[in-house]
Image (cartoon, rainbow, N blue to C red; front, side):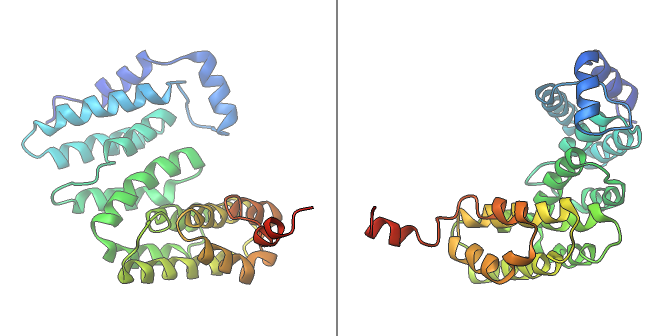
Length: 245
């Protein structure tokens, strides 16, 4: 049994609780679960300390998964975020148990903050093994809105590639296909996820982001279309430069 127990971890989070912050956070994140009011830098520091302690154990991956799952099922807001941070790492040897655990959490997603921290951990596992995208594609047809949203959030690294190789470009087009299929979905969080993907893509491949908007933009919600084009130059920018008033 690990020397670092769930009781020890929860006690550390509770020791850092700020009741006034908790009230504000619960309202902002629309949480019905318990919120302690622990600042994010404190959660970062605690999760890093826990990783160091667990890395010294004989089966560190199993120990980390055990603690992460216990934190997750506690259903405390900060504990779930800490669980995700505990598993967010680029290189994990024999990461099968981590990948399996992260997948098991997706159906529990019900708010953006927890979902996005877990998505950061999932991103690392997808980058470690892109063949796992076949599983993510299945999420795009889920009845669970947060699972559908997660399919775009966990694949954001492919929107951010500055010089993608042909195989990476193929993955990017595959994901843009998912985004195109999402366009008729009027759910705010789904529209936001499309915009987020296109916005990040526009910083590295403006022409492809523009082409998507030319084809699908009119069918997107106005706020999403505006957000997606946030970093794109005006289509008539060159003409305006050539013909100043």
